[in-house]
Length: 222
Image (tube, rainbow, N blue to C red; front, side):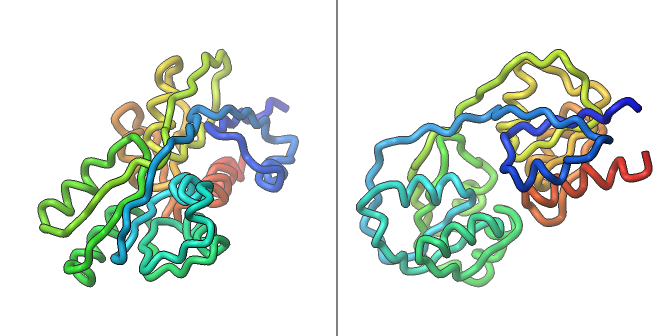
């Protein structure tokens, strides 16, 4: 029986790989995004902080000065981001599924607070423009580099798992989507992927586990 080829655009952990441990699937992996460290200084700030990715949290707490720091108030995106913050001794005031929902929540419930947003070198224009439009005080600090790490793949895949718009962009540098299903971690990634494919699915809950589950369910009857 011909195996169903699945591509993950990031290397998965061993537990995640085991989910594909079925003769039906052949899993290929490559980190299409490379995370680079940066030198930066956190500003003195007794207001609120925003983290929309695990990478931003890891970058901040990789600095020795931050390891014993307790942030006053934190807003974040995603359960994984919240989990890493908790492991670093932080309490999260509000966690939302995506940056759009978080921005809307802040505009309704925390508009008068002052925010520092720790992000990558790739700017989320929609997010920051929303804060300007709503006249909410937002200072941005770049804490890590998000760099493309594309390779040429000769295989054709029944499904490709994407975890960020930059992952889609990196994949497309050297490859085409063709008829592959694009299984995206959330609506922001799916929205970008729809510019290049009509076979796009996104997860209601943004997590790697949900991307995997959705991919496997897609081929459940084959």
